[in-house]
Every structure is written in C-alpha cells, then in structure tokens.
Image (cartoon, rainbow, N blue to C red):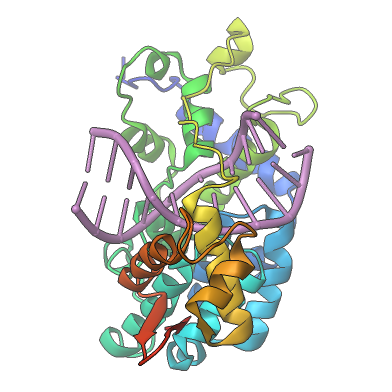
Length: 305
DNA sequence: ATCCCGTCCA
DNA sequence: TGGACGGGAT
C-alpha cells in the first residue's frame, strides 16, 4: 500500500477532475490570455489587493501607459505612484516595488525576466506566491501557489490537515500538483477557491469536482483558516497617508499647511493634528521612498519622489 | 462596520 | 514573528 499522507489514494483522479472542471468553464480575464511575464506580474501585484472588477480597468490603463518592462523601468517613480493612487489600487508602496522590479529586470537580467521561482523572488515586491504565479502563468515553470484561497481549499478538502496546528500547506499543495502542469493547475485551484470554495461555499451550485473526496463536504464542517482581523481604516494613519499621496499626485508640490487643511478638516497648525502630526506622517512616507520633503527658508514643501 | 490579502521590515 | 500597509465593495 502506498503512503499518500493527507491526500486521497487516487491523487490522479483528484487532479484530472479539477483540471477538467476548470477547462469546461472558467472566468475570463485579460491576463489569462497572455504568457508575457511582465503582464502577468502587473496583474498579480494588482490582484493581491484589489477586487478583480477594478483591476481590469487599471490593468488596461497601466499597460497602455507602460506597455513593457523597459517602459516601466524608464518611467519616473512619481508617475507610477500617481497612477497607482489615482486608480485606487491601494498600498502605494507596491507601486514603488513594481517600478523597482522593472529596473532590476532591466539592470540585472538584461531586460528579460528570469524563469525560475527562485530568481523571480529576488525581484522587489515578489514573494513566494507571486514568484510561483509568474513562473507558472508565464513559463509553466512554477511550484504550487499557496495563497489564502488555496489554503482554504486544502484545509477543507483533506481531513488530516484540518487537525494539525501548523499545517504545511506548501508541502501538500506541491504533492497535489501534477508535475509540469503548473500553469493550468494553479489557475484551476485558485479558480476553485475563488468561485466554488469561497468563504461561503457553493459546492453544488458550482459543481465542485472534489465533492466525493472533500472532508468538509462530507461532514458539513466548512471551517476555514483564520484570517486576522484588521483595525478599522476610517481615521487611521493609513487613510491619511493615502490622502497625502493622492493630493501630491494631483498637485506635484504642496506646502505643509495647505496639505494639512486638504487632508483633514480639523487640521490646525498648532493643534493636536497639526504640523507636528503631519510632519511625522511625511517623514514616514519619506522613509518609504514615496515622498520628498523640502525645508525652505520660510516653509516646508512636499512632493512625490 | 466589515471584508479582502501578500510582502517587507524591525 | 507580528505589525504596517489602501480604499472600494458589500
């Protein structure tokens, strides 16, 4: 008898049923129509933080502006950050990471993307997930991707994982992936997590191909891994950082008090949320490489870096 | 009011 | 290893 760990005996049936399910019907996205690593990277970075419906428009506009990695590498960072902010893509640091990654490809890889997950992960802003996604979708050369969708699917489907404190999702995900099929496999398992195995499961509605093997489907226990709850955004420091970046994207240079009054109605230069508070924010944004602060004779001005 | 989510950095 | 990071959608 073969040892299959937490996986069912007939792994190949599990594999082929998912691939068949995906091939029969799946959502269509522009980044699923290309194998260009640059386009894949752009779509992945955007998708990590923004609803897919909003990503489609931003993706199109971004490629319109910077059609290839050389164009992005040659862009001014302030333009990329301004684009990011004006398209409400969130996490402005990622715009600087993406810009820097493009310059790494230009300078360290002679303008053409490396094809292995290990090398891709050396690019700024590219971690294990994105490295495997780009390697898979561009080059069919990745390992199994492990994002929260995949974790939720594995957690529910296979009972043994369910009971372990620190499940090694990466090992299980790789054991499940058919060798040499990372492109279609990673597309398929993420589609399963995004369409059928959502937080509110839609097993029958979406015809989940794994129902006959799925621990959750058989027991009715659709527990999913905990996602940490985040502090509220309203009134947060992040909200004001975002407002500063958006304003500087629109005005290219602003002095301290004008900026202050524009980002919060209760700004008073010497009040609790005044110059001191604003300069703290700007100093952090400057450390993040997003903003440039200039101290003139009689005033302080800020601009996108 | 709550949800979404991978990467960087201390 | 855990905190910071955006803002629209629901």
